[in-house]
Length: 329
Image 1 (cartoon, one colour):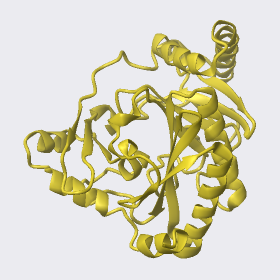
Image 2: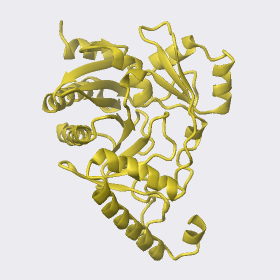
Image 3: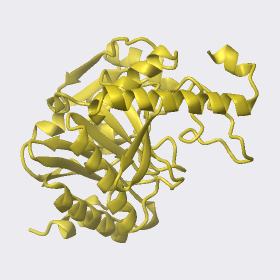
């Protein structure tokens, strides 16, 4: 398919891709009325098209650490080059956007939410064993969230998606907090039938631990609380303020993790090249992708103490003062 696309005029490639997507969407809706089933179907379609590789094992294990919680370490060399497939060139004169100009072979799923139109794109290099999608707004909005309205819109989209596909985990990387594409608003969805695989999610109730704020409640309540926390964090930290978010369904309610971050504390100290996103910052899950780093971990040269220090290095020094104000007493 790729070779055939290379011989076609760009206009023809775009038209063929649009036609394939229209047929896929029609078939998906008729076969799978539930959104969760359509999300799984677009994974299989992208595998059949040649965009996704066959499933391979992604090793991971939990290690004890000196911190209050263990660390999960994932060995995934595919993350070293997660966007290897070149996107389609745009028909108009503008810079390429990885979340607008998808590769020809990648199948997409249109997702209509109250907050607007989105597209679900299977990730070419998932973080863990779980299937993974990038959920990107059709509008070209920046990843950096400025003001209460931007937070409310993003959270509304994430909560609605979880309500319609409940056995999922949604994660957001702010600009300067692990986001690989900062010019187009998006978040990630992971198939998560057993959230207990992530250490922080085993803790019941609410609280603050290691720079992570744990919350619980219904969607509307959590939207208001997280929006207020984010506004307070920006007032405390200023222009370097950013964040990570994790949301998941829990019975009739939801769990939420809000992690205040600073844009200049994005990389994990002692782990060059690894930007800390919601997996590292909120879920104490470190994805090793470089061959040398994986070898160091397997041989014991990258020990739990170093991983603990790396995770601690991204907690902003302003966090304690902010938390005391946000949660007095």
